[in-house]
Length: 294
Image 1: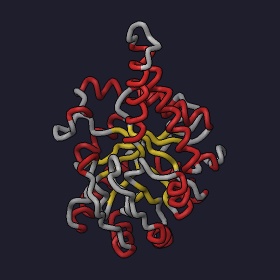
Image 2: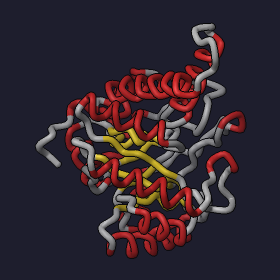
Image 3: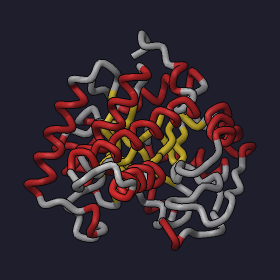
């Protein structure tokens, strides 16, 4: 069933667990993420990009036709699922991109003004909130700074303060807030220094769900601790993509196929991605969800 993202996250906040928000690029990843959620009977959030944004990385772009068809499939797939499924637009930097995604059928948008001065970030977020709430779509925003992607990962993060979080929440009307607590996007070059106490302080200071970006690559214990401290949404993508890609490469090279058949290679990637999603559903504590709540 397709549901509003904030409904899933409000229950997670109350229940002391987190819900994974799994980044999607292909139909294979959609099916892997949803199959994992359905097999564990847990809610799930799937994340898209603003596929047609000119500045988007080339390996993530889609044509307008491709984006429209992909989103029609994804929305219908979510509606037909027996578990709650939310669709989130991730890291969109423009009002126009949020409008486009809402027309596609997402149930939340993440307006990323984190590189702007605080007051400009608030103003942009307020504008998106006003528009999105009129469409029954929830809004995520980000303050602080989560490190860069891949090999360009930032080694020192700017941690979100309680004062910043309260000011932003009280003046923006946002439904969930991504905060910087020591994680980074992409592959970790060094062990992250997570500020668990800061999560607790932020969770006590504002009533909305907290979001952790850069959720790939942490330990099981880290995930359990951040969920216990108040993180309700954990973004996860890089290590899922790596698992699928490695499984496909291994299948090509293991000598089990006389010819490299696409369906066999695809299945290996699908199974690897489904496995890692199921593992992390367990780490996040999502199985605590009470199916009667949503």
